[in-house]
Amino acid sequence: MSYSEQREVLIKERREMVARYIVEHHCTIKEAYQHFKEDKDLMNMFQQYRVGFSLSTLKRELDLPLKQSNPELFKEVRPFIDGNRNNVLTNQSMTREAFARLIIVKRDVEKKSFRVIGKELELAETSVIRIYRDYVGKVELSQEDLELAKKSDMNLRPHIQDKVEQHQKGIEHQILSWANYALETKCDLPTLSQHFGLERQNVKNTLSELLPLIDYELYLTLQGQLGLCDELSYQEQAPVKKK
Image 1 (cartoon, rainbow, N blue to C red):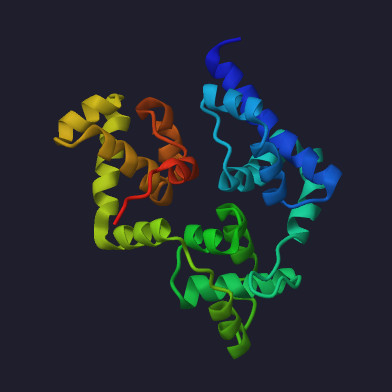
Image 2 (image 1 turned 180 degrees about the vertical axis):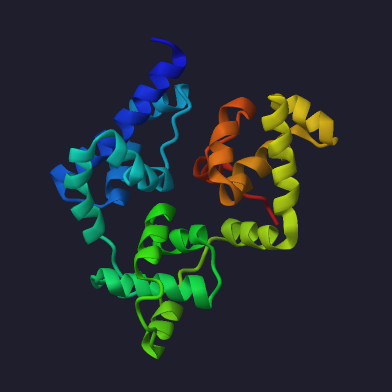
């Protein structure tokens, strides 16, 4: 079996392994993530084949990817995942409509992107989009909905805040120009950095952190070609700058 074939097998096994653990132990994605993260042999194997293992990756994988690759397992695990969608402030279970109202406020009133909302509410971006589309225009928001949205806001970690600010300041155009050049020319990271006259590590770090927020599919396409880091893995491993 080739390297790429083995990698694809591991990606499929990763999502099904976590899904089965959740079903068997009636736990959350986060609890399953913490359980498998302690398996050093498993983590080393994933690292060897550049298979990411972050909380955001698992949330994404246990949505549409799992539904497409294993519909039966998807049906088994989704009730547990949906049942764990709690109010981030009170930990009281919310109905799907209440959760939809929260998302609509954040999207339409607070003007937040689906990706930012997903990070705040600990949901896969695809789930946020699906819930939003199911309810937008069908519910009338109340003052209570607005207050709940304010109270439920989590304090984003500094690196996430910084990413959002950079995104809003127009860095998106610059990053996409790098990414599209790499895509069109099929070049590697050193060639890309040299073409734009930039330091190689800076280009790698910037694309690893910010490209997933701008165009996730493009990030996945270029991840192997440019040797980009998994977004959350990079955040965990990046050294903290001393003041």
